[in-house]
Image (cartoon, rainbow, N blue to C red):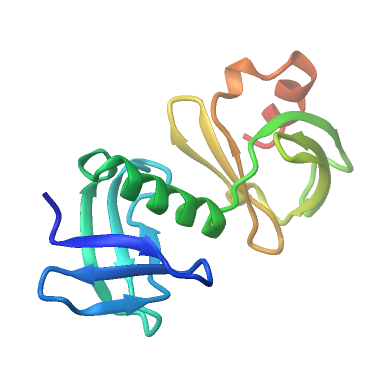
Length: 154
């Protein structure tokens, strides 16, 4: 049982009502560990950045509130998943990468090899020159051409 209830107001903003009756509009959901434990440790934060509530596990929320939080997180987070490396301009950095993602084809600039981080068994996080993150959930499932291109940077 949580110490709050969640709903959306007529403007579509998330509203948190605490058990003592305080109402907070425009609440934002923020994951503590978005990659390592995406369904654990979610903070509900006020418009001025103060934590109002802590959710240890999303699964502990009632279904309707869980959906509200997940929808809010999806709006806030955008990490395309790389499905294929099409081309790399050079094997020295900075280099221009053309990739296909779950959100479509795109190009980005990789500043250095340090911008490719291993975050799990076969999982990579690539940060482009603008700070945008791209995720490869399992590099071993990529096609041979993509793996060859990627191997030059790992």
